[in-house]
Structure formats: C-alpha cells, structure tokens
Amino acid sequence: MPAIQQFREIKDYTKTTRLPASRFPDFMISNWTEALFNGCAHDLPYQNHYFEIVFELNPTCEITIGQYVFPAAISRLFFISPHRLQSCQGQPSNEPGNGFTILFKPEFIHMSSSRSAFPHDFPFFNHLNSPGIVLNKQDTDSIATLFSQIHLEYDNHTVYTREILKNYLNILLLKGRNLYQPQTTAATGFNREQEIYNAFMLLVQEYFMKSDAVQQYADKLHINAKYLTQIAKKISGQTALQVIHQARLHHAKSLLRQTNLTISQIADELHFDNQEYFSVFFRRLTGNSPSQFRNFQSIS
Image (tube, rainbow, N blue to C red; front, top):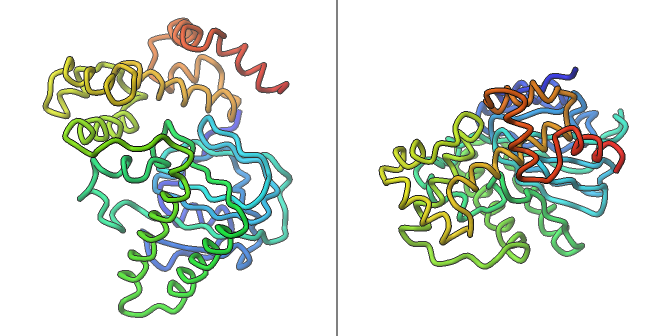
C-alpha cells in the first residue's frame, strides 16, 4: 500500500524530484532542463505543504490534482495550494522535460496580511476549484517569457533579488487570474459577507478533515452558526455544512482515485467514527459506495 508522500519543506521536494537545491528556504524556481526531471514526482501520490506553480509545455503525463484530471495535451499552467493531493500517470523518463516549477511558502509574499481576500483574488487556490489552465499559443509564449525572467533573476542573485522575485510572483498570480477568469463565474462585489465567506473557505481547507461542526467554524470567525450558513447559502448556493461536506467528499474521491488506501483507512483519514458511517456519507452525496466509485475509476 503506497503511503502519501509528504513534502513539508521545499528542500524535501527538490531532493526527491532531482531538482537543484533551492537558494531560499521559502522560494525556488527550476527550469526542468536543468535536471533529469520530466515534470512528475514519481513517488506518488504526494502533498506539498506550500504553494506550487507549474508551467508545462508539451506535457506527456496525465496529472490528477485533487478530484481534477488533466490529460496530456497542449501547454498548461497549474496553481496548486498546500495539501492538495497530486499524482500523475506516465512512464518515468530520464530525459529532461520542458517547463518550470515554482515553489513558495505563504510567508514569502506575506500572504497572511491579506488572508481573507486570497481565495477571492485567486480562485484557483480554492481546494474546490480546478487548479489548471490550458494555454493557447499566444498565452504560452507570454507565460514562458515571464517564467524565464523569473528564473534569470533567481540565478543572478543580488541584494534586491528577493523583492524583485516577490513582484514577479505577484505578476504571475495576476496573469494567472486573468487567464482563469473566463473559466469561472464573474465575482461579486467584495464586501463584508464575501470577506467572511472567503475566511470560512480558508478554515474549511484547513479543518475539513477534522470537523464538520458549523459552530466551530463560526466561533473561529466570531459570528453565530446561523449567520455563517446564511452567508454561505447566499454566496455559494450551499449551506455551510454542505460546503464542508463537499470538501470532505473531494478529498475522499482523491484518496480513492489516487491511492490504494482501504476504505477503512480513508474513513480514519477523514476522522469518521467508522467505515460504515463514511460509506453512508459517501453514498448519500454521490449515489455510489466508495468501493463502487473506486472500481468505476479503475475501468474508466
């Protein structure tokens, strides 16, 4: 039974994937041509405990991130938030791939200062949204140029490099948001309710495996559970409990699709009291048992 590999530090990931060691503990960029690396970490599935941005030209592997599957196709761009389960299907290669990887920790861009706005500004970092963007030729050229500029600055290390890299990273995030926007519904005005909902979504991403008690989330937001449910329903069309359950369901599907963990082990991972309770939960939301879902994925 393969365990889920955890990369808690950037240096752990670079060692496994044979990428060059990072110049900074909280940021790195690598051009895949620098190493015998084809874009997939093949000790899979795995989770990073920090953010990952991947730009891939002419991909040869099918990649699964959370519940989203991306077949090998034309150039693509991924914005992957911490703890999203990843795996890829394809033969390991000793030939260098064609692309870039950026890894960064939240503190690198002082993300905590705008914590509640972050998923609103960059919806691809929401665990319930797709993290991938398929690029056309024009966008591929533009993104490739930006990654090359970031990589050049990273290599030509000066006293101002960290600040320059932070600005480049913000440009990349904004360009990604611009490319991602047509794939999402138009954002509503950013007001107090939206701010509360965004903060709730961040809490869901952090605690959904441990608790589905709406009151606990409301307490952390210093509001009552009824008001939180009203806000969630107004903005997402789902109650607060339904949002939490969808996050648990997405992760359950990811584990069923990407690992050989038993149903009982997945129930434990998601902190269900027992396997039967988990199976009832899964069937109620999908119409299938966990085993039926896994069997269907294996033959599709």
